[in-house]
Image (cartoon, rainbow, N blue to C red; front, side, top):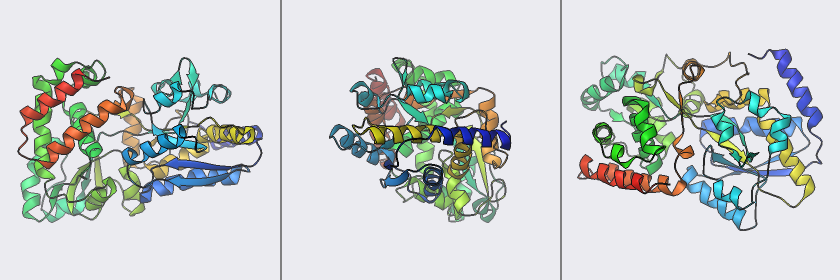
Length: 411
């Protein structure tokens, strides 16, 4: 762990390196919920206070599925921003291949990113033909079940400790007027929940066979059939969850209107803004309380190629600042995510963050789906789950057959 003195030394070295002319840097992202906005404010504060540059916030309301096409259109249309958020993985690969993203290799080498970023797969996801094209910022994992203590107390039940107990408690929650499972009506949320169940309720090699090896036979097999049945259970439990956005579903848990939610660790930011305490007001179950394995996904910033030399130099300052130890701690404590640096002190981490850190420390992390399949394939799978969760007449057999076909054609 880094000491405070080490933090200060690293910060001093960073400030010494920052020498570009003052610039206004427009940064686009899709972080607009309460917890997300608080985390972004830490990045803006660091840039505004520790450099001569200014953070011009380019938040785009909605999910990444809404924001990414807008970001890509601007870059390909000749109106690039200074920096833009994408998830770790393949979302920006065509932009990199087209020469539209800046090479950050010199900054990565100066900051020893290869030595400090953990797991290394995060930097690998930024690397094309040996060159680094993005700055990893955080580690997010999807594999969490968030549970409301107030909801279970109202229903006269103990808080579940695993997925089976959660499903078994659903009838009693309904009888108490509580929605068992909060879930927004968007494909990325529904597909995300399905993948959480696949990783959490099956051996991890099934997930890798399906998404990494694109094995359609496994996708059509008996193990994945169990997950489609679990998804049908989730569909039933979420039938009265009449919200759209993920943070609206999280709020149902925070306010005791719902028993639980399957959502990534970014949900922690919403609980934090609401003043709730992990372990007292809510419980978090990594791996649905079954397989305590996490995906090492998250967010990275890419920097479009700019003609102006001063702007380009300022981009480099921002890229370096994102990996600064103090910035990593301040941002991730507000975001609910984990730092990409393996050498920072997170003594202030709450109960849920410590659970995530302990799992990552074992090295038992899986690559995020965005690192394994293309955006086109992911979108097709999300569209399948929009239909599946909206229409209870779609059988698990029919949905699985369509899913296997999509995996067979995946890239």
